[in-house]
Image (cartoon, rainbow, N blue to C red):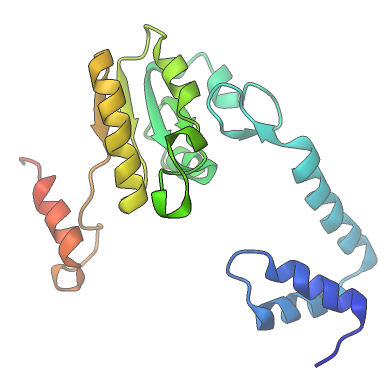
Length: 198
């Protein structure tokens, strides 16, 4: 179907977003067409503000509108622990939990040779600089439990263990409320490996 150029461009723009296929892009484009002009202007301003006003914290790599970010600036946080995550969304997930009170380091990705991403392509050098700070005595590796995340965690462990900093990994296994019969072999194997005494 041929659409007028402005709507066609909008559909193409929406399709550049992850998880948005042609039908969803069409639905979104026509939704925007029916929005009030003020709402469209606010929406476009929000998009521009995200690109112009947000940056990555020079200390931890978390997304922020002030540098350093509010977490790095917070003097009440435990400065002896750094939780290493792959993405800024992981920081937000950890913060929602309200159980962790240490600092973070965002790698902005994971080692993935298949995608041409090596250790030099993610935020590892600045992590090593931070570890020279004598206050840090534990590094929690909270990378994703997939091949890339595991490779990244193993690489970091090999780099950091010789420095003498305690390196831990988030436990993996069965989710709360999950049934054994529906768990895959890898999940069950991790659950057995990381079992704890009660």
